[in-house]
Image (cartoon, rainbow, N blue to C red; front, top):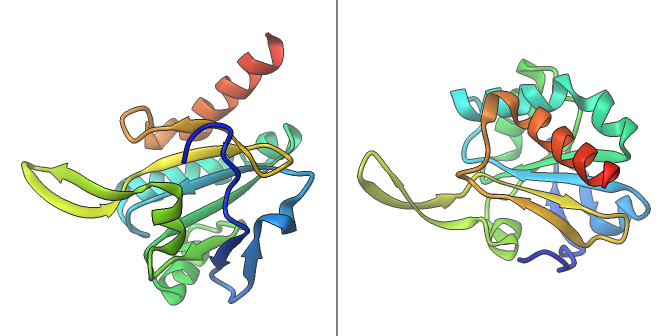
Length: 157
C-alpha cells in the first residue's frame, strides 16, 4: 500500500478474539504497525516504546494496533507479559500483512527468508495512509518517539 491508499475494512482478530474493522476506528487516527514475532527483543522494545508513549499518541488523536503472524494465544501472552493495552492482531494467514505490503522477502545474516517486514502506517480519520515508516527507518527502542516527532513536525508546518 502507498500513501493515500485506504486500509482494508477487515483488519483481523485481536488477542482477545475481537474482530477489528477499519470502520471501528472511523474518526480516529491509527498507528498500525507490523512486527515479525512477539516476545523477541526488537518486537518487545518496539511494543514497549509504543505502550510507554500511548497517552501522548492518544493526545494527538491516535489509537495503536499491532499485527503479526503470531497466533492469538501468543499475542495474548505477549500483551499480558508487557502490559500492552492495545489490540494485537493475530494474522496467522498473513491476509492483512499481504494487503498492507509488509509481508515479503527479507535478508537476515545473509539468509533470505519470507516474513513480516517491520513497518508502521499512520492512518488518518478516514482510513487513508498518511505516512509509512519503512523497516530501515524504524528504531525499535524509540519508535514511539520517532512517530511523535513526525506528528509534531507535520502539525507545526
